[in-house]
Image (cartoon, rainbow, N blue to C red; front, side):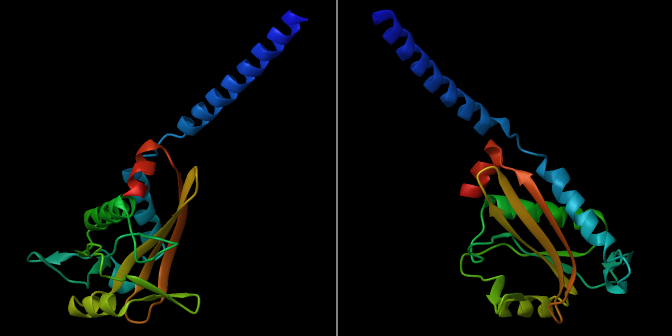
Length: 190
């Protein structure tokens, strides 16, 4: 009888330890994807969809001066609070701005500031904020690249949109997701 109780306790303890190990393994099984490559692919996809728009063709230079109007790039924001970003949202925007520049586009960078609202939600539609509209007019920008992200336990979902500043028309959009590995998880918290 005593051996049966010992075996039962041992089996219970073993089960408990194994379930803890499997959860530990599961939490670390997700590795971060190459954010740079993913950001570059996102920009390439966005640009493929707008190649027929003359103002968004590659901006050739003449005597070192871009001929076409620039594109603004804003930090990606948390879908649950569009007034907040994170290291993750800022890094994604930085990488996308880099890719636009590599592709020959004139890019004007906008840093996320705590007192700025880049996107505001009204009646279910995303509209550019008054401040962003003023900045785009000041720089004669044709479009702005904006994005949102929403993180779950194991995946972060992103939407990138290229929006015409004149009338808020979405020229193209791209949705994708990334696994939340240890690096991504850390960037989402800051």
